[in-house]
Length: 137
Picture 1 (tube, rainbow, N blue to C red):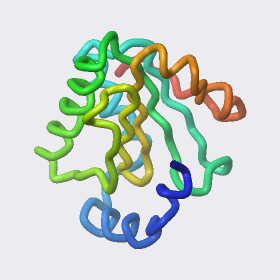
Picture 2: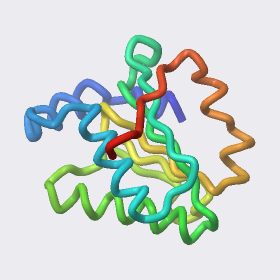
Picture 3: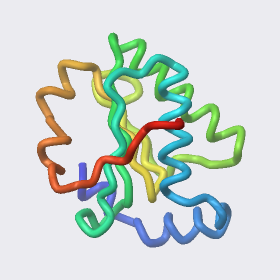
């Protein structure tokens, strides 16, 4: 999946930054967190992976209680961002609802069915990443 994210990264990132130059990655990650928490996302964290990952600055990781809840979280985030004219450069996993990935270039959102999250353990893989405080979101 990482190789997929890196393909065409510069072209997509440049295009999105031209369309939305004022949208900071951290602001986008926090906006995503707010939308997800309003939609009852569970165990949400934001990881700052700048300097660790070459393909993004932030991961927003959360889980849902069911595959339908996972899909609903993804739809809520995409719908809200779409209304602000911010589109994901890549999305996958929506049909299955086990692990949905939404790539907004500076922010990659991972929405897991809770069992999948434990199995893939992204927090463990990216243990060097700084956790962003969610207070005030």
